[in-house]
Image 1: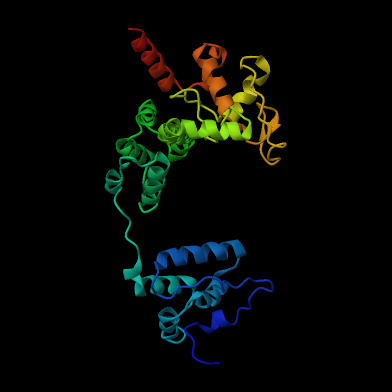
Image 2 (image 1 turned 60 degrees about the vertical axis):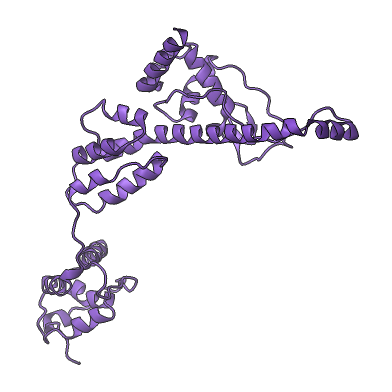
Length: 320
């Protein structure tokens, strides 16, 4: 047997029969040693093995400069796994990533024009770099950096939010923001094409005569009936499920003939194929109309208060 850093007491221990060697883990001296050590110990805890087996398995995860360092340790100097972990961290200490201070989060702000979804992704990535971050600090910094006024106002209704609560609440605001962005883009697209359609009116008439049709078919993306939509406390599908049998919503327009529609996309509101319930503009319009007509007073828990108050305020201003 060649020279080895392990003491004889470790070498005499047999590996368990079905032990899964961590050959998929690799540390070559360029990564954070603390992360590698933590991942290795988690793997060994899962395997349920003792100290000696951990010692025997650890060198399998080393490569390059790291395995050369291990082989250079004094013969018989390792009695237990704590000897390896202590020497390992000391050797590669300069590679340990320094945790950032929570104050760094104040620099993570939503950029003009940046979607709230992307801002939250950047903010969450930064949170992962901070040790000991509390929910109170995280929610305060997130609120400080938000440009989405509706979302920010909602976060001020409670002094402290957990990040899980924020992520849950954020879904509705993100969906509302992204739908609004699509509708604005669609309206811009429609406005851009309108002059061209008018300017070529004679040509369209000629084409209609040639084809025997007086209607020119154009395929524009569907846009909503309203500019602003009330924020809901639940996804629109769940809201619909709660009120579907109450006769509150107007009947949907028949779906256009799409040769049966895409059978993988089903709309509960239309009772037909071609799109999913959560993407149904007709349902969104019918629900918004019902809210504005006061038909959902019994279901006020489904309506997010900040937007409802703002809409009422806008309505009053429009009357004056």
